[in-house]
Image (cartoon, rainbow, N blue to C red):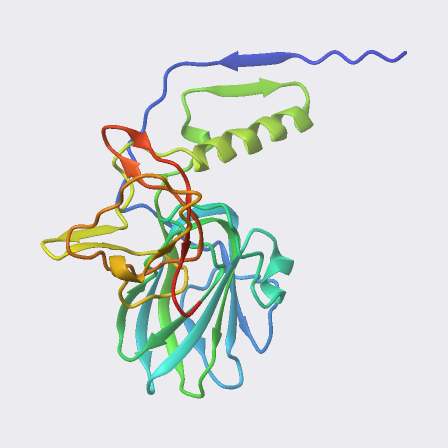
Length: 271
């Protein structure tokens, strides 16, 4: 039996870093072409035309945050399709590597977005993309559009394992790479309390909770059909709640003093 000795050095200490609102992940390589191709240059200026409508961006590693674009100029109103994916081949699929059914309301469960561009300036997605290395931007209209930059506004601060106070070093190159991948994955999944954007907009008229499910203009108490066999508690609404997103299925009411109540089935008329 062959025995392999591995020499390991490990230093560890407490680590805390506040997520910055001004940290951006920029693509390492960019390439514009007729179709999806592997990028090979770090050029930041992106011009999309009818003959070269697609740009592929490689961030070098998984990143997380709000996609942002700075439109430098355009010849007329334009529309762009943006895809996000952890693997390059996902960009070839109609829905990229999504949708993801197990994300929070702050994240976009869809991995493809369409933006209408009518004037120069900054464009930002309303929902964050939680993990992608690859991104593509495709021009869907015949007008020419130039982007000064495309980036991801970080929601996890600066992910740099080279500056972590904890580190790992061994005589095995493979083990060192495994640790580096794990350290970066953990860093990408961590964020400070209170550092994330709220999806609730509360006013005197009620609460608007943004989400990416199908849209319902307004839902009043009289429009709910509740399965009485599942719900045995009194339900009341003050005025009405305006839902930007609502979906049939199993729902729960939560009382701040009593916790989560019994489940009930919710059906929206017309669905």
